[in-house]
Amino acid sequence: MKRMLALLLCGAVLLLAACGAREEEAEKGHYYEISDHDGAALYTVTDGEMLDLLDDLLGTPAEDMEHAGDTEDLEVMYTYSYWQEKTLLAGEDPETDREYEELMRIQVPAEGETLVIQVLPNADALEGLNWLTRETVDIGELLTSTMTVSPETAEALRTPESFIK
Image: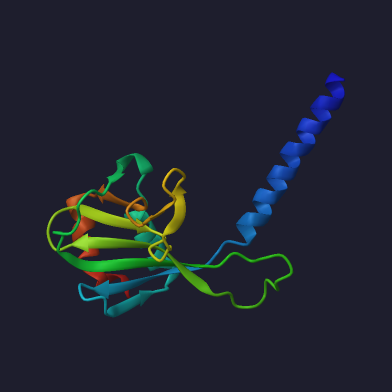
């Protein structure tokens, strides 16, 4: 019985490893669209080296993030929108171009080092989330947080033209 359990466990580990390898091969493409304070698109970052640089600048552990609270008084200088390829569904040809969807917006303030992060900024409100009252709940507030970055990172994000080759 122990031998059978060990074989099943080994099989599961090998299967998971194989799935992980296949997932790495099919890495989703992404890009950043940078907009000004009025929402007008200024730049689109698609260069691999610049994408890696932006990913490193914006890739901060989740423990540095907090619930946003009130961000209405924040003077936004730039917004970095993160777009990623949609998931390939069963039966779809992996060789065809896939659509992109906006997954996140990072707002960079004119002053300070606190960024506002909106995950799934185009998500609709959820109806009936509160099971007692069946109210419609705006999930935008739930998916918004702040992140404090170093002064150097904040300054780099205030010069978006440096990410264009």
